Image (cartoon, rainbow, N blue to C red; front, side, top):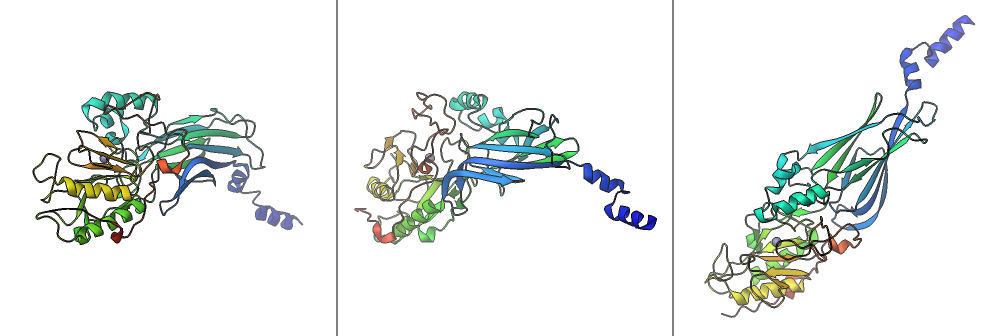
Amino acid sequence: MKARIALLSVALGLCSPTFAHILNTPTFASQFYYDGLIMTPDGKGYFGQQWLENATEVTLFPKNGNTAMWTLTLTSALGQPIVGEPVEISAAPLTLTVPQWREPADMAARFSSSVRAKVLTRIEQGLFRLKAPFEISSPVTDARGQISVSINNFHSCGNDSIPGSDQFVARAGTQQLTLTVKCAVTGLVAIPDTPSQGLTTAGLVGRHLHPDLLSALQSLGRAWHAKPDKPAGMPDHLTITGATMRWGGINPPHFTHKFGGTVDIRPIGTQAGPISVGDQAYDRQATQSLVDALVQLGATQIIFADNLTGVTQVKVNHKNHLHVSFLSEPLEPWHSEASDTDDEGLHWHHYEDIYDIRYFIPKVKQLSPKAFQFELGQ
Ligand SMILES: [Zn+2]
């Protein structure tokens, strides 16, 4: 009998301090709840909600107003909530840690001097976010053994192989949970340099676009390449001079170009390389036919220095590129008041309450190269 009890005790581990410790160890679990724009890997997206149990990594789209709730639950070995237990939350940049992305003065310095003060104000106001801001419901667990951490989107997504991310750590006694919060517009694709197929790039820092926009521009490029009898010296390809960072988000020194739905395109001239309105080589008629094609593809905004048909805004500082967007009102994500405008007179946009994917995901017509007609003259 004694022997049997001893055996049983060993089997149950009652003599083992390790097992006793495990028996008394609380469970620290988390649930992540996200309400906002959800992107699918093919670049499509929808507004919806997600619940993730014990997530270790999440991605927030860089749109203000996306909300996420990280709920931590502390339970005893017997499954009872542990009430009044202190939980310490900390967060720090994990990737994209350099001050140019994370410190207000260093970020502001990447913009033109005329807007630096405004950038700093927006950072102070919490509208333009270099790190994921968060708030804790209480320093100790409530009656359900829980504390909640509300985590907001940020805009330092970056251009590296992995997106900008912050690491959140929750500590309760000896228990610890970590959560990596990434900033990314997922699904963007890199623009290949293929002048032999009619499309190339020059001087890009961010070289990513939404896949629908890239394929539409590639079709346009092929049509341009195939156009016979171009005036002497005119290149056989179109040149993109501005796109989006690999993971979207803030794209200094540009205020726009955040979601992969906006490009800068070089005007057409009778020579390769940079061309500006006013240059002798600037070809107004050929550039008009490029604008016509962009309108055909569904461009919602074309900013250019020459008042061509289809240009939505004439701006003298847009001589060497057409700024073309396929988004609804592609303006700012860190707007303050409705009447507020940027230094170029554009309204800053309030994305907080917008639940229409066309503000973030471009709507582009897919046309075959044959659909484009270029009236070049001679
Ligand atoms: Zn632009």
